[in-house]
Length: 360
Ligand code: F6P
Image (cartoon, rainbow, N blue to C red; front, side):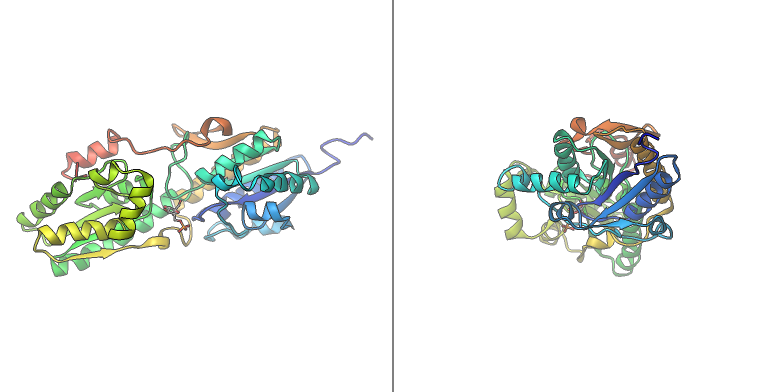
């Protein structure tokens, strides 16, 4: 009998890279269960701590049982790390060689990479270098180009919304303005969705630089209407119009001097208004814990889809949701691009039409 796919197991590596989020395990579960049930024999290898594990040759063979019981588990059973792409293409090109060598050493036929924008840039690079790569779009920031939604986003929206809901009752009791800083340094999807979902009065996102006077006016208007509290949902990367003109270095200097987004906005409000202001930064709480039901469904769909791509030998792509339909985008087409919130986005328009201020 000649050797073929049915007698030589297909070796697949799994890797989670970049900031964790809810749903990483749920995706791996769907992928692992599906490939193990398909007609090709497979061997699965879990690579530890993202690309660092691929560079350093740290992996373990995964038993099909490992993919059971992890649907609701937060974080990643493989561990993760950040390996800055900028370093990879300059001083650390040896790391690319190390990754290629380890891929070969392990005898991989495919590498499944779960990650965000930075991860996808590296995935595209590895694919260009000849590795068989399939990406899966993970991030609470929802900013991967070419997909309507990334897994982890819905769960983070739930958490951020609950944070704001809880803050609203304490703010109302004290007649305060609460500034809630939501994760998202470059893109404001999470702040926009959680802000709308929780009924924030002001939503500030990096894509729509604000005018401090307009933010203060919006807060004042709210209290003038005898409302007991005001909620400002501000993205981590929210910036005023002046800051938006600065280059990256100058902006970093300004932030180091004046504090993070919520602190800068609080300073503006307490300078102009009488009301008490408090700042809350939920931070990594937004990334932790169990995936939401919507995310569990999305993760299952995406993991199964990736398994079929691997089975069919379709590489150099990443899974995406487009108009409610799963598809595979070429890594080369999406790498290095960011899906920003447009100032004309229909949710921005809807929010504005119900009186939410974006400070613009
Ligand atoms: O990309 C996800 C994210 O949570 C961003 O929203 C945030 O800016 C960043 O990661 C924080 O990164 P770290 O976990 O390294 O502090």
